Image 1 (cartoon, rainbow, N blue to C red):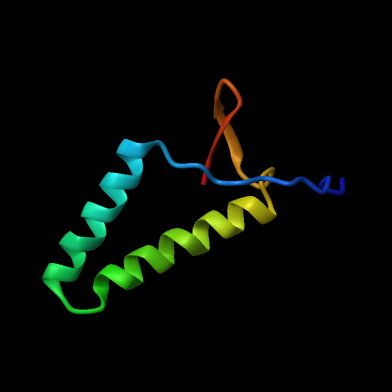
Image 2: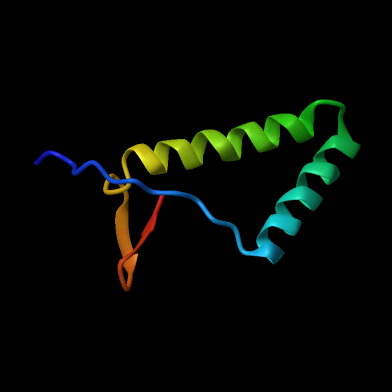
Length: 66
């Protein structure tokens, strides 16, 4: 079955965005450049999800898990 073209966007809850930034800072404090690698990994996964949102298993009430 072919996936529909969807215009999906990612929106972070403000507290989640803060946690993401704090996590990147924590990684950066451990090793220079690691914070950027962390953010890049998150962005890559989000892009995969946006491109193929139905590729992941439904685990609860329509929520999917990677």
